Image (cartoon, rainbow, N blue to C red; front, side, top):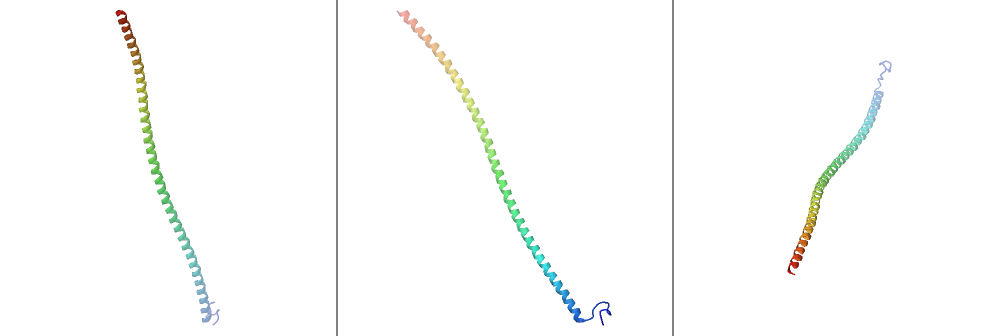
Length: 134
């Protein structure tokens, strides 16, 4: 029987086996190409996963550093506020001390004038008493 007698299909068993082996070889080659593509895809996926893990670790490290810097900034800001408050208190105390000094200087000047007046009065009394004795 020829190919035309069976509707274009060869009835030669050797030919059928050969064609099936060729198809099987093509399928094996295709399977190997797909395995290689799969391995490459898995390698890329692994690399991408590693890169993502490193990126996530870096993000966490940076977030931790940012939190640390924020805490330092808050601490320094609080210390600066406290220092400004203490400076303001010291300026008030200094203003009070200056005012007290001005008051003491004024009191001292008044006392000097009073003493000068008392001295003049005392000298006048002595002069008068000395004049009365003579």
